Amino acid sequence: MDKESTHRKIAELKNASFGSTLLRGEHGGTTFSLVLLTADKASDLELMRLLSDWRSAHEQWFQAIFKITVEGTARWYRNQLIETPDRLLFLVESAGRYLGHVGLFRFDFGDDSCEIDNIVRGAAGRPGIMEAAIEVMMAWGERELGIRGYRLQTFADNARALKLYERLGFREISRKPLVSKQSGERIEWVEGEAAPGAAVRFNVSMRRVVQDG
Image 1 (tube, rainbow, N blue to C red):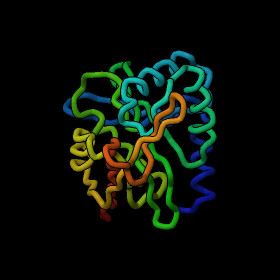
Image 2 (image 1 turned 180 degrees about the vertical axis):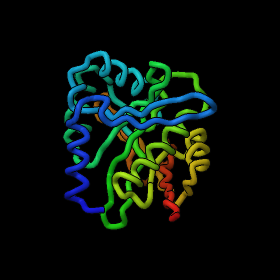
Image 3 (image 1 turned 120 degrees about the vertical axis):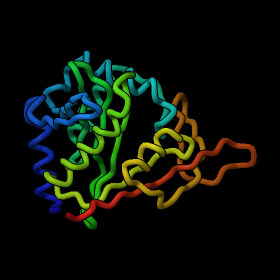
Image 4 (image 1 turned 45 degrees about the vertical axis):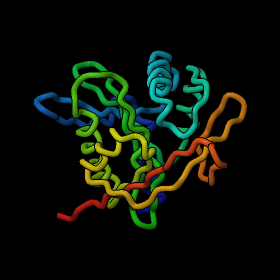
């Protein structure tokens, strides 16, 4: 996996029209699609509103908690998604309804690995579809981007996520303590030693190796 060619391919995918990169899957008799989010959706206020609502509903599982706005989400979309050379995000769609999103981020070109990122179940229904969506995305990453291993990070108290990732073949490789830091309205969980009586959580790092054959 070559850094320059991978970044070039990712940029081409994100600057193509929305719907150009469409991955299809099936789970329990239900068909679904993964639709890559692209630059031409940056001004779609309905999409920005949807992403904002999902982020707000699941803020306890993000390392930073802050006031979510549609305008802020639009800035994040442009600057942290489209303009970031090694980040991809797919909407999960089934029967004309968006159910969540799954993504890839932080490519390590030394060992051809990538991080599973921004896994958010936005709408209820279709049990098991997010797990199936991650599998489809990982298979695409192996095939199209040459990824040979996957990493991820999640909170130790997110039992549901841990079970999901274990079913997908991820295994814990480390966990580190996090302490809460507040600046104005922003709260962030960062690595560090907690003072006596202070809140503490643990960040779990997991890894899955792509099998040959």
